[in-house]
Length: 416
Ligand code: C5P
Image 1 (cartoon, rainbow, N blue to C red):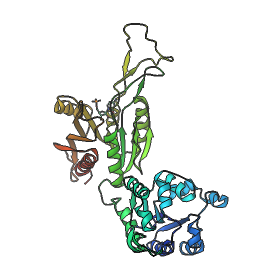
Image 2 (image 1 turned 60 degrees about the vertical axis):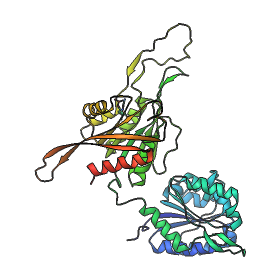
Image 3 (image 1 turned 135 degrees about the vertical axis):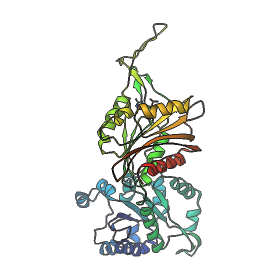
């Protein structure tokens, strides 16, 4: 069966000569069993009539953001959520520029902004427009975006008589780029369809309306794990304290502030989870009393009484049907000892130890990890339980590489 079978694709068509090739592309997608909704920009309609796409897709072509009857059927936000992929072919320099800066001035750009689906762009324009610094910058910025891929342009003769880069890729090439988008979603990986719940970032414990207690966690490790897990086909929910990061595309983000809020959010989701990965640097204590007004600096010393926060990971690991529990141990010293104690005391399956210090662990992009695990294996015959202990060092690498290696270890140990 084709990987595109039953996949819901929005085919965005912009105003360029290559728009006539989009009809052939649409035909190929339909032949593969995809459900395609064509969305044309106003200028696309100057190049090709919507009736061609309507006949091929057997769906009314959408083109206006303010089409009341179309909106009554499936509103633009619903349409954005419906899509498994948005393919823009041809994508003009103008639409590329709009997507780069997040504009939403027509139906197609609005859908791009409102959708979590991967976006595949097939640029098509005059070679000088492609080589223009502004377009180059836009393409450069888009190519770094998560969930966005660019196919083409091809080099060759152009409709205007020029020769150079800017021709839209042929429909067959774009079809295989679409297929690749879906096969890249790694339906074969052991984590495919597994539900992974991740905590990330710091928590903030308010003292008064302007002060709080917190820590230096940037959230980078948790966000990297969420991104890699999602790419491997897992269904990821990320519960995050306040950080300066964007949620990876395709990941459900729940934002929280305090440890108690994080605890509540985790327990809303945890019964659904196969794996719980606690990367958050949860504040151990919070002020007993939250001052309603700003505390004035009258006395020479100030005592703020603190009470212990709930241990989210520990509470999850106590559940009768607990998910696989992966904890992190950020320590300045005595790494292995503290990590092993946490593995046992918190009843975890894996503990990931990492050193934190002046320029290590928190806030930085690279890290090194030391994994310790206690896998409980049940033999199929006789259901005999065996405890398998082990450890592995993951040497200095980017947090994204480490996230991938860590998830591979999780999959190897527990989901093969
Ligand atoms: O006990 P410690 O804070 O060092 O444990 C670290 C691990 O426990 C991390 O995985 C962290 O996310 C988790 N944790 C938690 N709730 C807390 C404290 C830590 O989930 N209140």
